[in-house]
Length: 245
Image (spheres, one colour):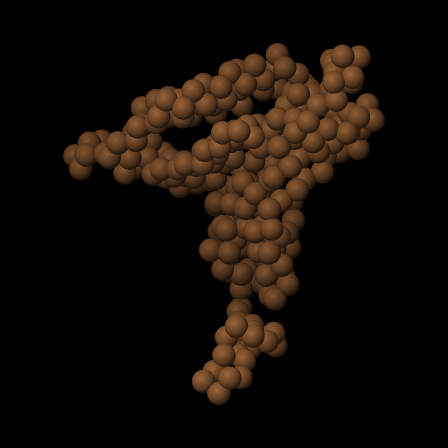
């Protein structure tokens, strides 16, 4: 057992961490890991024509509904090689798109399955499906324009109002989370569409989701050897908890 020196008894002896035995991976843990898989990416990198490029989060929207969780994010270049851009600008992507989804009904199938099946499912390719794209600029011009539109909205101030008790709510979304940053200005905010409303944000979100749908997955830059992903430690720690099962 792991000794916890910051936890002491009255006689000065340290407490120990006891691993909790469980018969299955809980639905809450499966949902948390799915959420972190969707949202926890901090960097995306790849090589194009032997030129390494790193992309960092620029703007993203996470939506949670009764049937699925969805992440739509755009990553901008963390740094640029001006010589490469001048010589072969058409061969190097400027942005990276990431579309990820978790269908909740799929996880429900595994809640009562054997432990090994649950673990293989969570750590396999089926729980979350994510697609990384490096589109040509003409394919992503609407998305880029919407990023700047959201920046302008946040600078001017976004007004989120309470929904009145008798007011009818027309939405299938339970929760929306926005992340926005360019190295100088950073905004992270969220709200529940059943309790609060913002017409400007709602309209923008519809356009954001539509713009991602319009991007052709078959058109864009192809990495030399695939992509590399960096996650925050939160996802890694949650995955490590599966070793206890």
